[in-house]
Image 1: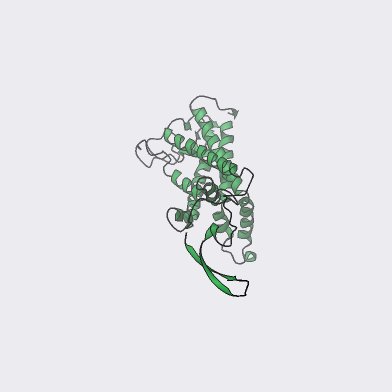
Image 2 (image 1 turned 45 degrees about the horizontal axis):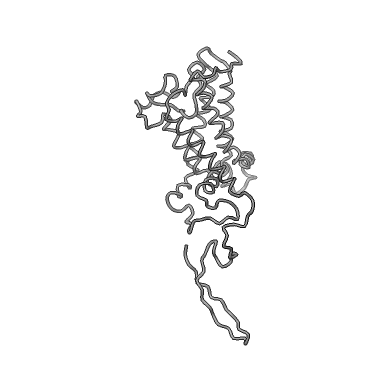
Length: 288
C-alpha cells in the first residue's frame, strides 16, 4: 500500500492560513473514508455466509479428491453406469467396459486419477468461474469477507500477477468444460443400454438429471454469454445469435444457484454409482 501526501489549508482566527502536510494511507484508510477503528459496524452475523461457503466448498473438495483416487466402485457393468469423477476413463487401469472412448494410455500409477484428462480442466473451469471467485475470495482469502467489513490485506494487486492472473484464462477453460459435458452426456446416453439391452432405472434418472444441470451451469457461464453475443454491435443484424444470447442471459441470472446445485448433483451421482457398484444397494429398475 502506498502512502499519499495531503496538504490541508488551516485558517486561523486572524484570517492567516498555513499548510499542514500529513501522511495519509490510501485504500480503505484513505482520507475520503470514515476514520473508523473497528473492522465493521455491522451487528448481524456477517461471518456466517462466508463460513458456510468455506465449509461447503471444503466438503466437496475433500469428497471429490478422495473418490478420484479410490479407483474402486465407479462402474456398474450391468447397467453401464459410470460416475462423472472417472469420465473419460482412457487407460489400462480402468475397469473393463468403462472406457467408452477406448484405451489411450497404459497402466497409471496410483497418484494419478483415472480421469486425469478431464479433472484438471473442470477444476480450472470452476476455480476461474466468476461466481466461485467471489465465493472463495470471501470465504478463504477474506478479500473482503463481507460487505462493509474491512479486509485484513494491506495491498491488492488484482488479477494482474501470478497466481490470480490465471483467472483470465476462464474462457478457455469454458471451451474445455463444453467438451467434458458432452462426454458426460454421452455416458448418460450409453447408460440406457445395459447388458440386457435398453432399460431405465433410478441410476439413469440420476445420471441424466446431473447432465442436464451441468449443461445449465456450463451454458449460464459469463464466458458463454460473451461468446454468444458479447462482440455483437447490432443485435438486429444477428437475430439468431441475439435469441441465443437472451436465453443464455436468462440462465446467467441463476449461475450461482447452478454452481452450488451441480456440486450437490455430482456428489449424489457419484455416491449412487458407488453404492450400486459396491453392492450396498440395488438399482431400482423401471424398465428392464
